Length: 349
Image (cartoon, rainbow, N blue to C red; front, side, top):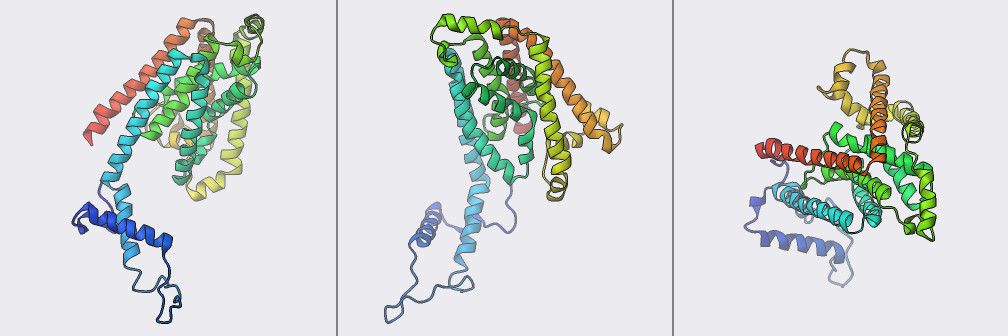
């Protein structure tokens, strides 16, 4: 990456020590600066920004610091740190799943607070914060509500399972989520779709009396029959009601309430992203219909995808091996997408 022409050139300094001294001097000067005193010992008036004795240093320093942070060295350091973080999250998740699957939801929550906090600020800055209204974020909100507020709710147990073993997990395949360790945004997207599926796997196959707040395993066993009837009603029709509620709210927000704001300020949405792609099923269908009909086509395809994966979740609910196999399949697909990125895209840069 080449910096813009108005950025400073690192070669202006003979070595890094000179730059560090300048940074330290300016930083400390901003913290403890006092206006110079005159001959009587009385501090003179603060210098204005137009004072030629002060203006050459700060703009020049700011340009040089900015290049230091966003230039090649800064990007390389950021990618290294993100790679360490992403690979660490992988083995921490694997260790927790194997050692204490009953407490995995705590790791999910802690990671979510950190990663979603960073995503909100980065997406807000890049005008992509309307992505946060999409279905996967809604499904994660339902899961957080279930594991922390309504643990004994049989309704939320089956609904969150249907979403997490359905459209949330299968979005890894549909949207090509990639296990790319050096890219924090890709790591966050993978967390958003894969880790909730892992949480539902642990809650389904490793329930504990402590989690549900029952005094004994017998009481927990008496509770499980009420949540074990995973059929079309509990895993397809009822989740479809939740999906419909989200779809109505999403349509009103994106296409009615905030439509003019999104257009005027150039905000990005998932609908806008999908409609601008030159490949895929939606593009093949959307290019044959009028723009005014595209939102309806988008929601029809979106609902079809969700309903289809809801049906698949029935098999996962009734079989530990089927559920585990599907989870491993989607996780492996994220690895495959990451391998394609590293060896076909990243290596060619």
